[in-house]
Image (cartoon, rainbow, N blue to C red; front, side, top):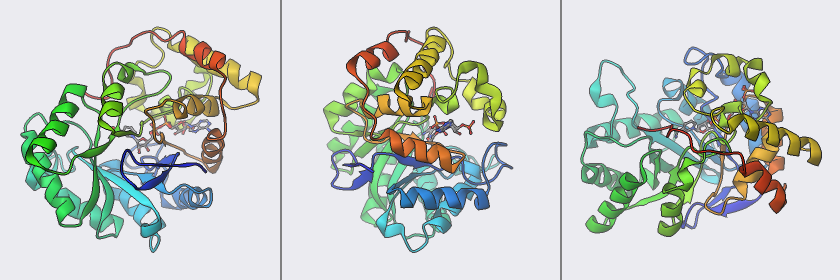
Amino acid sequence: MEYTTLGETGTTVSRICLGCMSFGTSDWREWVLDETESLPIIERALELGINFFDTANMYSRGESERVLGRALEGRMDENVVATKVFFRMDEDDPNSGGLSRKTIEQELAASLERLGTDTVDLYQIHRWDYDTPVEETMRALDDAVRREKVRYLGASSMWAYQFADALHASERLGLERFVSMQNHYNLLYREEEREMLPLCERAGVGVVPWSPLARGYLARPHEETEATTRGRSDSHARQHPYLENGGREVNERVQQIADDEGLTMAQVALAWLLEQPAVDAPIVGVTSVEHLEEAVAAVDVSLSDSDVEYLEEPYEPVPVSGHE
Ligand SMILES: NC(=O)c1ccc[n+]([C@@H]2O[C@H](COP(=O)([O-])OP(=O)(O)OC[C@H]3O[C@@H](n4cnc5c(N)ncnc54)[C@H](OP(=O)(O)O)[C@@H]3O)[C@@H](O)[C@H]2O)c1
């Protein structure tokens, strides 16, 4: 495994972050693995040198945090755990979502309990809250750091102007600022190259992209998209413009380079992302140990300049997806 630092912090993270949205319960989404299927994958990740794990309060309505907490019991200190807040946890309670002080304090306490820890390494806002002043959010997050409940702050998908606004608010008020951006970025969705990635590079913010394999669309030929349980049932995947414009051709080129180089499609797609200068660690989602082993092997793959150019060439702008 290769390691890097998380943004400009001194904390070391593996270049593959294990996404834990796949772990929890299939009662939440059909393709999600239950605890007995998830634990061996997390154990193998630790053996392979992964020390960076991403979850969220809303994944499997808290069950993903519980599974991760049990898997890392007694080993939290050696690992870097990230979770998130924003989406509503209880449909009947408007204060169970958003980024008000009340929500952040209550949801953080619930996440820590489920994870079985007093402190979480990275606490991320899952989206932008249009109803709460950013100053209130940043003060509540700063207090969480002062109270030693959180070590670092991170953000996830939003417009670049909003992220710049939040960074500026922290600076203006002398508060902790975001050290990382978890955004939607892969070979089939590159709109983040316009504004967000240059902002992150300029501000020294680490980038940890989500859905690096386009939820599976980059990991198998497009005619086989529906070959797996997730491919058939992940309605969120269909909301993204993966096969629009040049998408089909990008998928075919990934397949072609994988065949030529003796790699899998997932490895080609991850190798491309790992070579992007802004990217610290893609957050890979897996539903088997084999997927995980392939992702880890991708860290050692180096694509030639001509392969990179060939992979990138068919991409055409697509509608923004992942945030509103
Ligand atoms: N911040 C946000 O808003 C946000 C949004 C989405 C995700 N996330 C985070 O990002 C993580 C990853 O998201 P994701 O699961 O959508 O990511 P992804 O890595 O793009 O897709 C994962 C899917 O790709 C397929 N796959 C993975 N490795 C493979 C391989 N070697 N060969 C063939 N197929 C392979 C599997 O599909 P099959 O199961 O169909 O085989 C797997 O479920 C999540 O766990 C979560 O932590 C964050």
